[in-house]
Length: 291
Image (cartoon, rainbow, N blue to C red; front, top):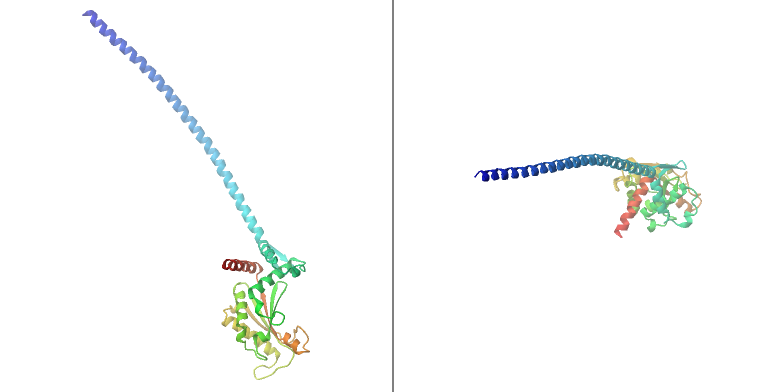
């Protein structure tokens, strides 16, 4: 019995001794894992810190790039809208010059070859667009209607037979189509000012309604202005009525044909050149889309 008791105690001691070794081994292994975990955590925090630094640099570069892009866009826009003086009579932006160049490709090359300055080119382009808008194909351009440009001022000269009966200042209904087209051009641009000038020949006139050519020329100009305002919706603050009597003839008044040329109404339009070309360009787009 004594031997059995000793063997049992010995077995318990051996078992206890083995469990303690395993425990210590596990403790050691656990410590190593904790150390590795701590090391990994430190490395992770270090990497996150470095990533934050890199991200801040990237954000700074992106901000700088966006800023430079914005500055570039602003400079480009400023360059496009930069106004250039044209012979001390008008200003024109780079964007408008581009539109003008596109228009000039459609202008008669013989006329274009005579343009020596930017002002000449601008006058040709404005005249081309205005003639296209008004569409004078139904008229005799030599006798009925003529469009000229002088120092970027658009001048439309209309023979009296298109507007009035002889010695009358009442606007004829046959002028409605032409006046509608003129009104459309005038109404398209808020900054346009329009002066309507009446011109007569040199023959004297006097009756119960008209005392002389001054009266007749003013009354004719006023009649056209009233019709543009009342029938075609042109804002009256844009309009000026002016009578020039017979004192600015185109030709001498020595023949019937010449007197007919001198009897005319001249409509003077002063457009904002930039907006005028923008308008014409948008109309081109509309026409193309309709086609």
